[in-house]
Image (cartoon, rainbow, N blue to C red):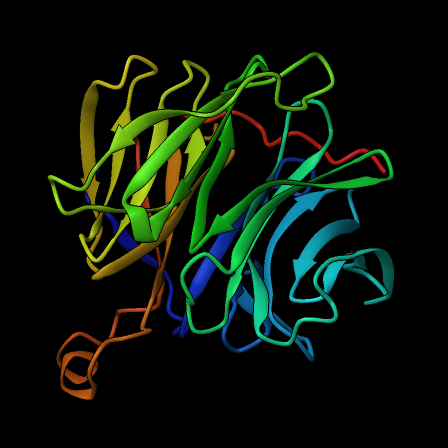
Length: 286
C-alpha cells in the first residue's frame, strides 16, 4: 500500500478531497489560492474563485455545495453557475472556512477559523434543510469533521489543541449531548487534520506535519498509519471504483524554500491502493 503521486498540481494548502460517487471523480481544494481542482480524462482541471474555498458536499451529478470564507453556495460543474445558500461570517474579513463534510442525514458541517489561525476565532456550523446553526464556537483550527456510518455520532477536532471529540446526534443529525474527548494526541505531538470514516466506523485522520494518515477504531485503538511522501498530510478520502484507494491532499504552507527545492512533491496529491476500503459520501439535501 505504498503511496504514489497521483496529481502533481502543487497546492499551497491542499484540502477537502471529495470522491463524487456519481461521477467517480475526485475533487479537492487549494484553500490559499482560492481553487477547486479535479481530474478529467487524465488531466487536471481547475476552477478559480475570488475568495477562499475549502470543502464541499455533492448534491447531484453536476452540483456541489461549497464552503467559502463568506458562506455556502451551490456550484454547477457544467455551467460554472454559483447560487448562494447561506451567509456565514461574511461580515468578518478576518476569518475563512476550513474543513467540512456532509452528514448521513443530508446536512453539511463546516468550520471557520482566523486567516492567521488566531486562537479561538473559529466556529463549527451545521447547515440542514434551510437552517444554519453554530454548534461549537471558540475553535482555533477546525478539522476532522466526519460521521459514524449510522449517523449517530459526529467527530471533529481542533488541530491547535491536538484533540478530537465525538458527539452523539439525534435522528435529524443535531447534537443531542455535549462532546466528549475521543483522542488527546498532545502527548504524541500529533496534529489531527482532515478525517473520514470507513464502513466499520474507523476514523482515518491525516496528521499535519507527520507524513501520514492514522486509522483509529471506534474504541480509540490505533490500528495503523499509512505513510505519505509529503510533510503536511492534510485530508484523506477513499475513492476509486471500489473505494479501496486512499487519496490524501498535502500542503506547502509553512515549508521553507530549501525544503521545497529538496522535496518538490510537498503540496501534491497522493494515492495509496488497498490501504483500506471506504464508503460513499452521503449527498447534501437542499
